Image (cartoon, rainbow, N blue to C red; front, side):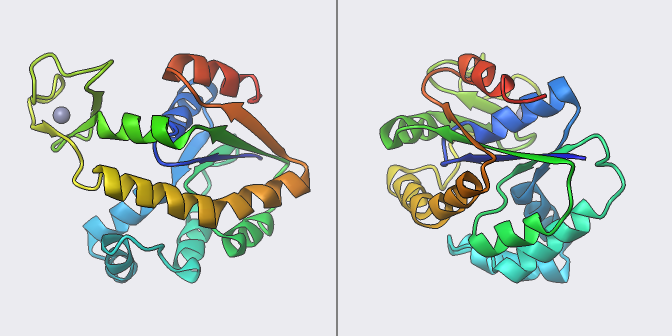
Length: 210
Ligand SMILES: [Zn+2]
């Protein structure tokens, strides 16, 4: 099976790219953020462990994330290929993933300047009910503060303030850039210019997917 790995700082549009790839190519998007949130909602022991780390803004321990991903990759819906979003974030996670066989592997890093990423995140609004994403500048809800889809309250995520966003950007630079270097050394890394609107960025990403 084919494996794609998306890298990108907070605000790079990585999650959106993963969704587009799933829609157009049928590769299953595996988001560790979604897996962790789902464990937390179910109230599982793993979810309870992850929660404290996530709430304090730290990274969830490698052994826990690696185990959750190992379980996800063991399911039988991935024969057509899959896209990793948010994993691996550390070298230990990258090595664990490399131990999982695949027919081909491609890593794609979406590059975006810090100021543009911060600006995007600060104008991003999310529906509290259904999770729909809006943007104050180029995709505002039809009625201010109200979700077009479900009528729920649309607001900025509490962790999307400038200080927190810049902190997340720094954590990404420190922890994840070495992981990108790992895939560069492996010879499977491509870099994509992530500046500008989602559609042209996706056009560049799409050329790398087959
Ligand atoms: Zn909604």
